[in-house]
Amino acid sequence: MNIRRERLLKEMGLAPIWRLRMGNEQDDAAPREQAAEPEARPPQGREAKIARMDWNELKQAVADCRACRLCEQRKQAVLGVGDIRPDWLLVGEGPGAEEDEKGEPFVGQAGRLLDNMLAAIGLKRGRKVYIANAVKCRPPGNRTPEAEEMATCFPFLQRQIELLAPKLIVALGRPAAQTLLKSEVKIAAARGRLFDCQGAPLVVTYHPAYLLRNLPDKAKAWEDMCFARSTMRRLTQPA
Ligand code: SF4
Image: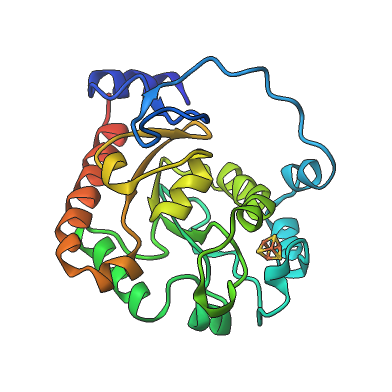
């Protein structure tokens, strides 16, 4: 995180950036001050190769990937869609049937709701906004991706985040939040808080597909998007 952004977050009363810790704490969802972490080891093998990819190499590698069993029933891998110089990165769970068919995340009913959520805070898919998923291939029957599948796919998302360098990340739903924060997350407890993801502030909200089944929670998602918008404004306003 650059110094200016860190200073702005401090002024907003949002610093230090919070980060969930791995472990068996009583309330895994409660954000805690970032703990001193052991020195990171350099990634090995496949992970290291992905970490060096440029955008075109990443696209090709995802299209060709057979690293987990989600490749078996996909029509195509879905890397993501949108502005590759985004302010905003939204991350969902995984492609559904229509996404698998069209090669684009968040199409269909959940996608329309996401577009409405974006429009409500003055955003539009593709305009300073990039949309991706935690896994790039459709889980059969639209089941939740398994932890191992998300872990296998994570280096792609990690590299995407590095290359996109968004100013703010919105995790849509629990699987996306857990993948990005590498910890157990309860959306209800994590809402309205600011986390750190690879140096970018991250907020969580509900997945649009969940909101379609739980209409009363749409108001909470609206609050979350407003929180994200106000955070972005504070981050980008002139010093
Ligand atoms: Fe590869 Fe990710 Fe698709 Fe699994 S979900 S096959 S890791 S691109």
